[in-house]
Image 1: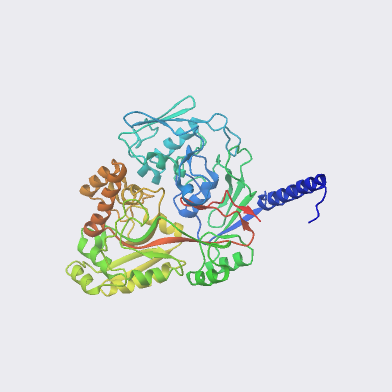
Image 2: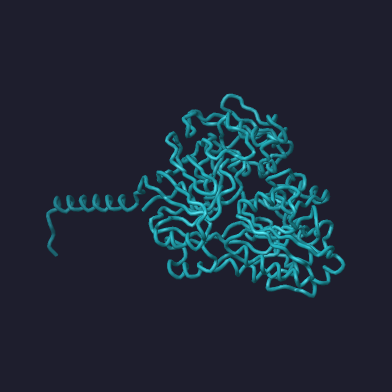
Length: 533
């Protein structure tokens, strides 16, 4: 075999290596700039971090807010592992587990209005959340902070660049809670308006530049952001109000890049066949979530009526209800905690394959009161169809069911208002963080009920169970999770504030130009990490 002179071979090899490296760099380079358009069928509830508590809103806030601790911009299990963000590291914790000392980075970054971020901006968030005027849902996560029920919060202090938080009791899940968007840095003069601020300055990679409720949201890159999180796209433009059918067509045709509220339930199977699963345009990811029917225990037919609440659990057709959500929607359940969450133990309490009317009628006998049931649900997607099934199921028990449909944001607002005249709320919950406290205590502890923005939509307030929840929250390690697992079964079987029906998958449909898809186990579609192809 003939050989070229050595010097020529070396030169040629160098050229080849350089060419390959250049091609690799070009292939992995992320395009900067451009606009990603997003479609929402229903508007977010708020764009104010003190009040926002709807999944698409938190997805947005993952891109806009700056927190002491956050979750990395990564796929898989890593996306749910806490890392320091505005803090220099994890806090120093006192020996008794009550005092957390966070050191806030100096000169780290600025708000979108150019003001610097200091420890005082995190203290301002706590004080604003605790103001009764705000009626923030975050108060459910502040009950163990000294003075957390009034503003200013005495248990949150600033000393130089240190934020010091003092708790009333050791709380194993405190660091996960502090990473929620509620506790993001805010300007110290941000108005305390219970209706929220539509375009508050923020210190994350992006900020809400403009919002017209029920019409549009414009999110732009924060020009003062100096952090390490990705911020590739110049802006995100939300369009609110198109039908799910129109949204599907817009995304397929590239007129919109992301169907943030999904598509018609009947379309998921066709989309999966056309684009395949997790291959670039259609993604399916399991989430820690539960869909349930909250039965209002504070009024009407379900008040002091465990028998009828138990009857509903036997009467509903979970299989048919889930089918209305379409292909790959999730899995049926009859429990509060989702599989995959530490503590879950499958107890097989109620029928999953179809109604057990014989048992349901037995429990309902003598407990039907005036027979009238008002159901609140949303007016799009699978909600109306699911309501029809529920209506039919309960009619088999001799109940007269009236269904009231609202846009999703209005439904949430109404159900969260104490005294609202509904009997059943068709609802769902996605984990704020991976701990059973976020399902049991947040959704069922009656001590957290306030005038509005409630999460306890069954308005369940039982002193015995409140104490059981409180005791479970103090535990750590395996004992914590086994106790919560037993409490899940106890509540579901004996107190029966809900009829849990399904655990959900997150189905995400994007356009051909939506690039750099990154999925956060906590927040869903990571918009900050996305790019335009």
